[in-house]
Length: 183
Image (cartoon, rainbow, N blue to C red; front, side, top):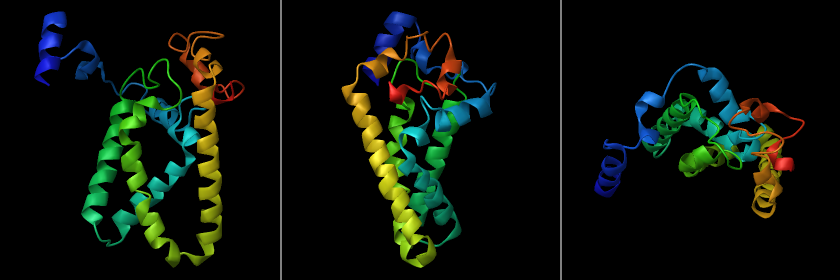
């Protein structure tokens, strides 16, 4: 941290570079940004990782039932929610040139931990067991296929600039006729 502050002070005359300043945050467009970071066809967390939808169910479970490690799960859910709110307050919520929801890399592990209560409660929901297992299988295959394609294809990176720069035309993030993962 001291090295970062020294570098920042040397380059920007401030302890943190402009990128980390809270003055960049705004509630303007909050709901659009939140829905975009979760469901945009070219950056949406749940589009690229639909298995993480189960973290919502896991959060509901940990807040409604007494579970072992319940306070830990509740803390994780608050951290994830706070993180999503912070990103939604960021005017550049899509994270620039990238593939998928890169700004959420910091909480993917925590969201995955929130899926554990779903598996712990699975035996209690016999009617939902088969559809839930089918969803898990489908979401896992989808996520692996989308991310595998993203690793192998140069075209997914070209999507950021062609046919137009995503940072100049962020409406492209909502274009279902040309989602990044299909390039």
